Image (cartoon, rainbow, N blue to C red):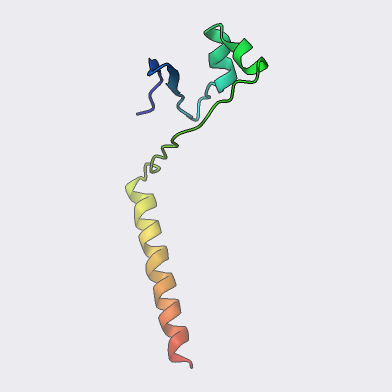
Length: 84
């Protein structure tokens, strides 16, 4: 599940912004909402410390089709090897 988090940790503003299909918030938009957009204007740098990627949710039909595609590719590769 995507989560949104804002906290101050050891004197640093730490936040996580989920990127979801319905839309997401940009770091500048968050800073503006917090009244901190002047920080960027004054030259403060933002540092990305992590990117979390989720596996796409596969339906059983998609999963079966993917399995068949992998099996077909493996069979084709094996057949090409026999021709040499």
